[in-house]
Amino acid sequence: MHDIRKIAQDPDGFDRSLARRGIEQAAAHILDVDGERRRAITEAERLRAERKATSRSAGQAQVAGDDAAFERHRDDASALRARIMDLEGKIRDCDRHLREILLEIPNLPHDDVPDGCDENDNVEIRRWGVPPEFEFSPKEHFEIDASHGSMDFELAARIAGSRFVVLTGAIARLHRALGQFMLDWNTTRNGYLEANPPVLVRDETMIGTGQLPKFAGESYRTTDGHWLIPTSEVSLTNFVADTILPEDELPQRYTAHTLCFRSEAGAAGRDTAGMLRQHQFEKVEMVSVTRPEDSRAELDRMTGCAEGILKALELPFRTVVLCTGDMGFGACRTHDIEVWLPGQDAYREISSCSVCDEFQARRMNARFRRTGGGKPEYVHTLNGSGLAIGRCLIAVLENGQRSDGSVLLPAALRPWLGGFSKLTAEGEFGG
Image 1: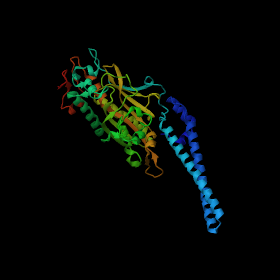
Image 2: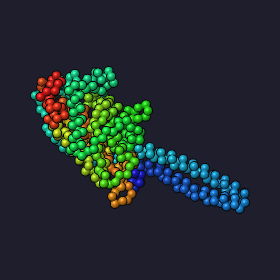
Image 3: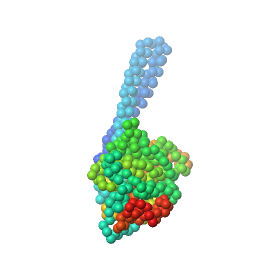
Image 4: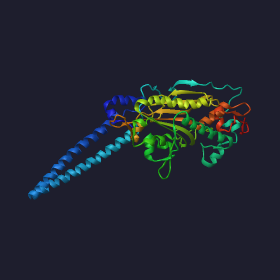
């Protein structure tokens, strides 16, 4: 959420930043509503003072036995009270309207974020690894012999419908091993505190990280009003909601492996084959809470943490800076990491690391107080995938596939797989 005082200081700059994201001008409307609210507050304060004086005069008239004056002052006080109540209602309406407007406006991009409309305008900043060369035409993950019988989309469709999958046997174990590997990597090497947060959350929790109200259609809601999280960023970031942290407790870094749920309402027709885009999936998430002056460096650190997992798994990738038209609602700068998928002959997103500055903190009322004292300040929040487990499974299968239908597994995973080094064409562990 945005600071109205900053909008008032530079309304043209605010609108220019929105324009970079393809959003219409909003500053004038925001300041009009805020001005109406401020005028109502000023008038209500004036009338309260007048009513107080009138009530005092009524008391004096009553003591003096002047019944006519008493009645007149009492009627005046009653009329003032009614006007004050009307103004208080107007103030509440303005507050509600202002909040509704601000909750719908995305974060402003950093100055060095590239301008653009969509993913075609993103800017690559580095690559790592060399895509493997095959003496055969590489297959997509669901076509590889090793995954046949252990990656069942038809069974999932009978149980739950489209965009679900049932994993069994060695593939299910490989999927589980990837999650454990990522979680252990983040806690032992990257300094994140492991958490096991709720996957059902309240409206306020979704509002805090920006999923509501704008993106209600992209998430699932239960009949009792809870929301299934689209990512554990929602739960983890809200750990600091409505708190004032001591400066020496920052940064805070959390990681979690959870189920995630997305309706994929805006992805009709995209990636319908295989398990690249699912309604239910698992992800290891990273969340950081920092001082304002540390957040940009933390973004680079978080990106490096996610890249380190891919390097350990020997999976080629590239890192891009998202352009203004492709960034998420709450982000002011985002680094996407795209892993190489031989079956698609393309790099596809496997991690998205974003810094949100104080945007989420304002929505959550998350603050800190500096060691030297002073007024509380809003923290900065960051989030990133470390990594999307299903997509990592896809990358491991496709990059490790062999001509005989088997899959060579990354050496780093062997401690989590009982020492096995490959999947046979029959879908069993071997090596």
